[in-house]
Length: 180
Image (cartoon, rainbow, N blue to C red; front, side):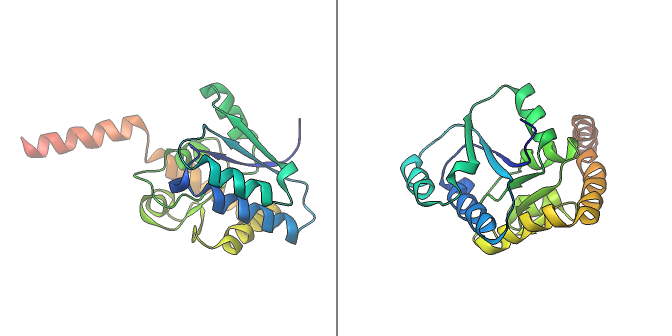
C-alpha cells in the first residue's frame, strides 16, 4: 500500500532467529518515530509457539505482517519494494535471500556469522544476530543514511553477479577440468 517496510524471507523457526528479529524491530520502533513495518514471508516450521509468544509481548506488533508462503513473483515484487532485507539467521549454509535482495537492488542487513558474512562481504550491513540493539541500529542506518544505502546497493550489484548460475557453471566446469 505504498508504506515503507523491512522484509525477511525465510522459513520461520528458531535457527532463522525470527524471535531476535522481532525483538530488534520492537526496539527499533521504540527508539524511533518511524512508521516503517516489518514483513515476514515464509511458513512456520517448528518453534511456532515461541515465536508467537514473543510476538504477543511486542509493542509494535501492529506493524508486523506475516504473509505465509507466496509465489516467487510476489516475493520478488515485495523484496524489490522494501527498504531493506533483514536476514539475521543464526546459521545458514549459504543465504540465498541475501543475493536475491542484492539482485533487486535492495540493501541488506545480515548476520556477521558463517556463510552470511562471506556471501554479503562489504555489500551489506553485518551485525551480531544475538545483539538486538545492533540489529535495531542497522535498521536506523537504513532509514537515516541514504548515501550509505546507495553505496551498499552499488556494491550489492557487483557482489550478486558473483553468484549467478552462469558463474557457478563456469567455476564448476573449471573444477572438473582440473580434476581430469
